[in-house]
Amino acid sequence: MRVWLHEWKGNEWGWNAWSLDHTGFATWAPTRDEVLLRVRGKFAEHQQWLARHGCNVVEATPGDVTVVEEVSGNEVLFEHDLVPATRDEIAECLRLLSYSRQDLVATVEGLPDSVLDWDPPYRQFAEWARWRTIRQIVEHIALTEVGYYLPAIGYSGPDPTSLVGAGADWREQLLRSRRETERFLTQLAGSHDRARVTRGEEEWSVRKVLRRLVRHELLHWKSIRRIVRDYGDKEKRAHW
Picture 1: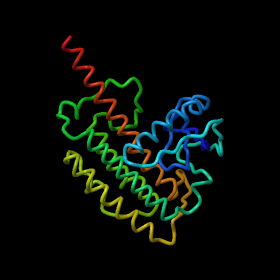
Picture 2: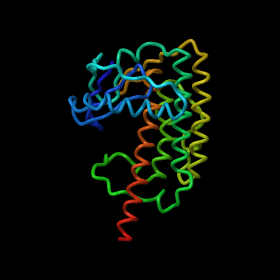
Picture 3: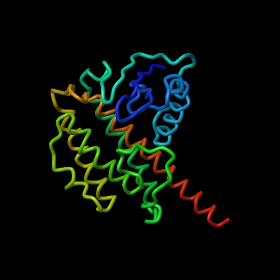
Picture 4: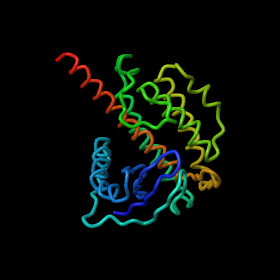
Protein backbone atom coordinates (compact mmCIF):
# COMPACT_ATOMS: atom_id res chain seq x y z
CA MET A 1 0.00 0.00 0.00
CA ARG A 2 1.39 3.41 -0.98
CA VAL A 3 1.43 6.26 1.54
CA TRP A 4 2.66 9.84 1.61
CA LEU A 5 4.00 11.12 4.95
CA HIS A 6 3.60 14.62 6.36
CA GLU A 7 5.44 15.67 9.49
CA TRP A 8 3.67 18.67 11.00
CA LYS A 9 5.73 21.64 12.11
CA GLY A 10 4.37 24.85 13.59
CA ASN A 11 0.88 25.07 15.09
CA GLU A 12 0.35 21.31 14.84
CA TRP A 13 2.60 18.36 15.54
CA GLY A 14 2.92 14.66 14.78
CA TRP A 15 2.71 12.72 11.53
CA ASN A 16 -0.01 12.15 8.97
CA ALA A 17 0.09 9.20 6.60
CA TRP A 18 -2.04 9.83 3.52
CA SER A 19 -2.96 7.32 0.87
CA LEU A 20 -3.38 9.69 -2.04
CA ASP A 21 -4.70 6.82 -4.14
CA HIS A 22 -7.82 7.06 -1.96
CA THR A 23 -9.24 10.56 -1.61
CA GLY A 24 -9.59 11.70 1.97
CA PHE A 25 -7.95 8.76 3.70
CA ALA A 26 -5.28 9.62 6.26
CA THR A 27 -4.29 8.71 9.77
CA TRP A 28 -2.28 10.52 12.44
CA ALA A 29 0.17 9.47 15.16
CA PRO A 30 2.80 11.22 17.29
CA THR A 31 5.74 9.54 15.55
CA ARG A 32 6.70 8.26 12.10
CA ASP A 33 6.92 4.65 13.22
CA GLU A 34 3.56 4.79 14.96
CA VAL A 35 1.73 6.28 12.02
CA LEU A 36 3.08 3.61 9.66
CA LEU A 37 1.88 0.92 12.05
CA ARG A 38 -1.60 2.45 12.09
CA VAL A 39 -2.09 2.67 8.33
CA ARG A 40 -3.45 -0.77 7.53
CA GLY A 41 -5.96 -0.91 10.38
CA LYS A 42 -7.22 2.62 9.77
CA PHE A 43 -7.47 1.96 6.04
CA ALA A 44 -9.64 -1.08 6.77
CA GLU A 45 -11.91 1.13 8.92
CA HIS A 46 -12.11 3.65 6.07
CA GLN A 47 -13.13 0.94 3.64
CA GLN A 48 -15.80 -0.28 6.06
CA TRP A 49 -17.17 3.26 6.14
CA LEU A 50 -17.32 3.33 2.34
CA ALA A 51 -18.97 -0.10 2.27
CA ARG A 52 -21.76 1.21 4.51
CA HIS A 53 -22.49 3.72 1.76
CA GLY A 54 -22.67 1.04 -0.91
CA CYS A 55 -19.17 1.43 -2.31
CA ASN A 56 -16.94 -1.43 -3.39
CA VAL A 57 -14.37 -2.27 -0.74
CA VAL A 58 -10.68 -2.10 -1.62
CA GLU A 59 -8.60 -4.63 0.28
CA ALA A 60 -5.12 -3.52 1.26
CA THR A 61 -2.76 -6.04 -0.29
CA PRO A 62 -0.49 -7.98 2.08
CA GLY A 63 3.03 -6.69 2.47
CA ASP A 64 4.81 -3.62 3.65
CA VAL A 65 3.47 -0.10 3.46
CA THR A 66 5.47 1.79 0.81
CA VAL A 67 6.38 5.42 1.52
CA VAL A 68 6.20 7.39 -1.74
CA GLU A 69 7.20 10.81 -0.39
CA GLU A 70 7.83 12.63 2.88
CA VAL A 71 7.29 16.34 3.48
CA SER A 72 7.68 18.48 6.57
CA GLY A 73 6.09 21.77 7.54
CA ASN A 74 2.81 23.43 8.42
CA GLU A 75 0.75 23.56 5.20
CA VAL A 76 2.88 22.02 2.46
CA LEU A 77 2.35 20.10 -0.77
CA PHE A 78 3.26 16.66 -2.01
CA GLU A 79 4.41 16.29 -5.61
CA HIS A 80 1.11 14.52 -6.21
CA ASP A 81 -0.72 17.74 -5.29
CA LEU A 82 0.95 19.70 -8.10
CA VAL A 83 -0.83 17.77 -10.84
CA PRO A 84 -4.17 19.19 -12.06
CA ALA A 85 -7.17 17.40 -10.58
CA THR A 86 -9.33 15.46 -12.99
CA ARG A 87 -13.07 15.90 -13.30
CA ASP A 88 -13.46 12.39 -11.90
CA GLU A 89 -11.45 13.34 -8.80
CA ILE A 90 -13.67 16.36 -8.19
CA ALA A 91 -16.78 14.21 -8.64
CA GLU A 92 -15.35 11.66 -6.22
CA CYS A 93 -14.74 14.38 -3.65
CA LEU A 94 -18.34 15.56 -3.93
CA ARG A 95 -19.58 12.00 -3.57
CA LEU A 96 -17.48 11.37 -0.46
CA LEU A 97 -18.58 14.68 1.03
CA SER A 98 -22.20 13.61 0.59
CA TYR A 99 -21.45 10.46 2.60
CA SER A 100 -19.60 12.29 5.37
CA ARG A 101 -22.38 14.87 5.60
CA GLN A 102 -25.07 12.20 5.88
CA ASP A 103 -23.19 10.63 8.77
CA LEU A 104 -22.45 13.94 10.48
CA VAL A 105 -26.07 15.08 10.40
CA ALA A 106 -27.33 11.66 11.54
CA THR A 107 -24.99 11.83 14.55
CA VAL A 108 -25.86 15.38 15.59
CA GLU A 109 -29.58 15.34 14.77
CA GLY A 110 -31.67 14.95 17.88
CA LEU A 111 -28.92 15.71 20.38
CA PRO A 112 -30.20 17.93 23.22
CA ASP A 113 -28.58 21.26 23.98
CA SER A 114 -26.95 19.72 27.05
CA VAL A 115 -24.87 17.51 24.73
CA LEU A 116 -24.38 20.06 21.95
CA ASP A 117 -22.95 22.60 24.40
CA TRP A 118 -21.02 20.29 26.73
CA ASP A 119 -17.35 21.24 27.03
CA PRO A 120 -15.48 17.92 27.35
CA PRO A 121 -12.47 17.62 29.66
CA TYR A 122 -9.95 17.10 26.85
CA ARG A 123 -6.62 15.65 27.89
CA GLN A 124 -4.88 17.50 25.05
CA PHE A 125 -6.31 20.39 23.08
CA ALA A 126 -4.64 22.97 20.86
CA GLU A 127 -4.67 26.41 22.46
CA TRP A 128 -5.44 28.06 19.11
CA ALA A 129 -8.49 25.87 18.38
CA ARG A 130 -11.72 27.72 19.22
CA TRP A 131 -14.01 24.71 18.81
CA ARG A 132 -14.57 22.48 21.81
CA THR A 133 -18.28 21.69 21.98
CA ILE A 134 -20.22 19.80 19.31
CA ARG A 135 -22.04 22.97 18.31
CA GLN A 136 -18.73 24.79 17.92
CA ILE A 137 -17.22 21.90 15.95
CA VAL A 138 -20.12 21.88 13.50
CA GLU A 139 -19.78 25.62 13.00
CA HIS A 140 -16.05 25.14 12.47
CA ILE A 141 -16.67 22.48 9.79
CA ALA A 142 -19.02 24.78 7.90
CA LEU A 143 -16.80 27.85 8.23
CA THR A 144 -13.57 26.08 7.30
CA GLU A 145 -14.91 24.93 3.94
CA VAL A 146 -15.89 28.39 2.69
CA GLY A 147 -13.51 30.45 4.78
CA TYR A 148 -10.25 28.52 4.52
CA TYR A 149 -10.04 25.61 2.08
CA LEU A 150 -11.97 26.91 -0.93
CA PRO A 151 -10.50 30.46 -0.90
CA ALA A 152 -7.06 28.84 -1.20
CA ILE A 153 -8.00 27.72 -4.73
CA GLY A 154 -9.95 30.72 -5.98
CA TYR A 155 -13.32 30.71 -4.25
CA SER A 156 -14.64 34.25 -3.68
CA GLY A 157 -18.26 33.77 -2.70
CA PRO A 158 -20.25 35.53 0.03
CA ASP A 159 -18.50 36.55 3.21
CA PRO A 160 -18.12 33.31 5.23
CA THR A 161 -19.47 34.91 8.39
CA SER A 162 -22.67 35.84 6.53
CA LEU A 163 -23.10 32.20 5.54
CA VAL A 164 -22.10 30.72 8.87
CA GLY A 165 -23.17 33.23 11.46
CA ALA A 166 -22.24 32.56 15.07
CA GLY A 167 -25.25 31.29 16.98
CA ALA A 168 -27.18 30.33 13.85
CA ASP A 169 -28.93 26.98 13.66
CA TRP A 170 -26.28 24.34 13.02
CA ARG A 171 -28.32 22.72 10.23
CA GLU A 172 -28.53 26.02 8.37
CA GLN A 173 -24.80 26.62 8.83
CA LEU A 174 -23.97 23.26 7.26
CA LEU A 175 -26.52 23.69 4.47
CA ARG A 176 -25.37 27.17 3.40
CA SER A 177 -21.68 26.26 3.47
CA ARG A 178 -22.15 23.00 1.57
CA ARG A 179 -24.24 24.65 -1.12
CA GLU A 180 -21.34 26.98 -1.83
CA THR A 181 -18.86 24.10 -1.76
CA GLU A 182 -20.89 22.06 -4.24
CA ARG A 183 -21.46 25.06 -6.50
CA PHE A 184 -17.79 26.00 -6.55
CA LEU A 185 -16.48 22.47 -7.09
CA THR A 186 -18.98 21.90 -9.89
CA GLN A 187 -17.74 25.05 -11.60
CA LEU A 188 -14.16 23.99 -10.96
CA ALA A 189 -14.75 20.69 -12.75
CA GLY A 190 -15.48 22.65 -15.92
CA SER A 191 -12.45 24.92 -15.55
CA HIS A 192 -9.28 24.63 -17.62
CA ASP A 193 -7.24 25.45 -14.50
CA ARG A 194 -7.61 22.58 -12.07
CA ALA A 195 -4.15 22.78 -10.50
CA ARG A 196 -4.18 26.25 -8.88
CA VAL A 197 -0.92 25.80 -7.03
CA THR A 198 -0.11 28.60 -4.61
CA ARG A 199 3.15 29.06 -2.73
CA GLY A 200 3.92 31.18 0.26
CA GLU A 201 3.55 30.81 4.00
CA GLU A 202 1.03 28.06 3.14
CA GLU A 203 1.00 25.93 0.00
CA TRP A 204 -2.24 24.84 -1.65
CA SER A 205 -3.61 23.22 -4.78
CA VAL A 206 -6.88 21.77 -5.98
CA ARG A 207 -5.83 18.21 -5.26
CA LYS A 208 -4.77 19.13 -1.74
CA VAL A 209 -8.07 20.88 -1.06
CA LEU A 210 -10.08 17.91 -2.33
CA ARG A 211 -8.41 15.48 0.04
CA ARG A 212 -8.45 17.91 2.94
CA LEU A 213 -12.18 18.64 2.56
CA VAL A 214 -13.06 14.98 2.96
CA ARG A 215 -10.52 14.27 5.68
CA HIS A 216 -11.55 17.33 7.71
CA GLU A 217 -15.20 16.38 7.96
CA LEU A 218 -14.45 12.73 8.72
CA LEU A 219 -11.96 13.74 11.43
CA HIS A 220 -14.42 16.02 13.19
CA TRP A 221 -17.27 13.52 12.81
CA LYS A 222 -15.05 11.11 14.74
CA SER A 223 -14.47 13.77 17.40
CA ILE A 224 -18.20 14.40 17.73
CA ARG A 225 -18.94 10.69 18.16
CA ARG A 226 -16.30 10.54 20.89
CA ILE A 227 -17.88 13.50 22.69
CA VAL A 228 -21.30 11.83 22.53
CA ARG A 229 -19.85 8.64 24.01
CA ASP A 230 -17.97 10.53 26.72
CA TYR A 231 -21.10 12.46 27.66
CA GLY A 232 -23.04 9.23 27.94
CA ASP A 233 -20.32 7.73 30.15
CA LYS A 234 -20.40 10.85 32.34
CA GLU A 235 -24.16 10.54 32.79
CA LYS A 236 -23.89 6.86 33.67
CA ARG A 237 -21.26 7.58 36.32
CA ALA A 238 -23.46 10.31 37.77
CA HIS A 239 -26.23 7.79 38.37
CA TRP A 240 -24.08 5.10 39.97
